[in-house]
Amino acid sequence: MEQHSQEFIKFRVLPMERKMTLVKQDDQLTMTRSVKEGEEVKTEVTFIPGSSTMGFISEAANLVLLRVMAWRQTVPSNARFLALDTEGKLCYST
Image 1 (spheres, rainbow, N blue to C red):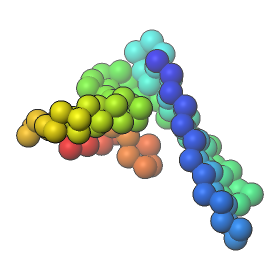
Image 2: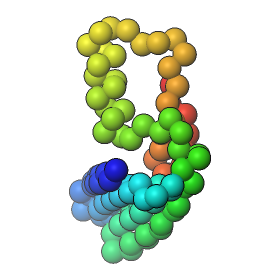
Image 3: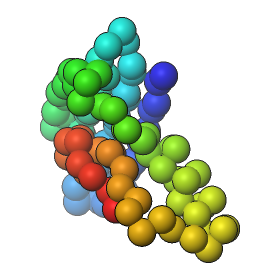
Image 4: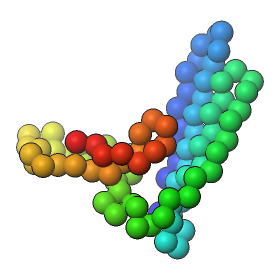
């Protein structure tokens, strides 16, 4: 599994670009995040053990799942998904 995402904001004063790559290798998830604000670039690599990703749903899969639930007009009352927050940390999405 591999996923790439990119976001950017074009402000004249301080443009911002955020890139994230998720790669599942063996029994771990490798996340590379790069944030560019103006000319400053910060890159970090995080390794998440496979045992911590049970039930993980990627951003792309989350979008598809939300659309299916909207189309069916039903959301399970106990729906809770393991996802990544804006800082790249594992969190629950309900």
